[in-house]
Length: 329
Image 1 (cartoon, helix red, strand yellow):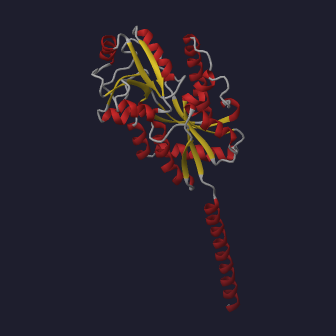
Image 2 (cartoon, helix red, strand yellow):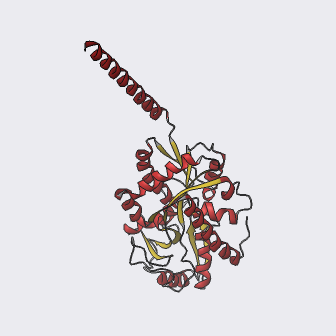
Image 3 (cartoon, helix red, strand yellow):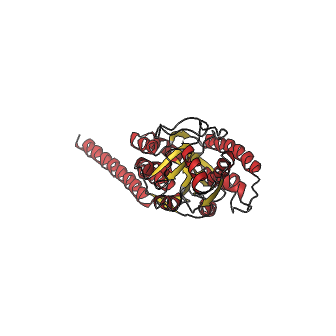
């Protein structure tokens, strides 16, 4: 009997030691896991940067490793996209981007240094949004039609409108808006929405076109006034602001998207858990509320759904860019 007890104790001891060893290996693995880098192609302080930081804060809990937002501003996200192409496909580097870098840049730039279809793999989409037209606090106009009247009377029909990047959707919108209202509007490109917003807050430029997330906080604070939005319906974050379709400028109802991309060749076994973490992240009430308050329409898109969304958006804007007469630079 005593031998049996000694045998049982011995077996239990070996089991405990084995479990402890497994636990130690798990802890060591977690400690040695590499942080995830989430690149953003615009400066700190803009809408895209704020969105990335909201996601990163929760993603680190879902993934169990630090998630670091790395800003690589310049050329409308082109620098960050080139960095993603050069990154090792090991699941440690991702690129959070909206439509401009992924869809528009390759259509307006002769040699962007990357080709999304062959250099990147879509991982997950998490939101759509709309662009908006806003006026600075020093501009007396309280509505879009008042802005049009003000430009005609104060500037002889000429005016400058800030845009976050050259050859971007906002720049093409400025051209269309000017033609529609018989104004000589010139797009003034910036290196991101943050410096554009700084000039609007300082009344250095009277108006700007950018995404709702770029404008939302200063709009709520009364420092700038969003006077029109694109899309097929008014935005929940600013229900009193009319759509351009309501103002007689239809054809811009196809809304842009936000997605996360990885270098081509990244294993599916790595991408799938990351996409699942994104889905869980945006499903949490805290994250969803923050993103919605910024003017995003939150909704998960799988890799295939994000790819389809990008292709449809590209078809829409390829026609608009071609009809504008723009030549790739």
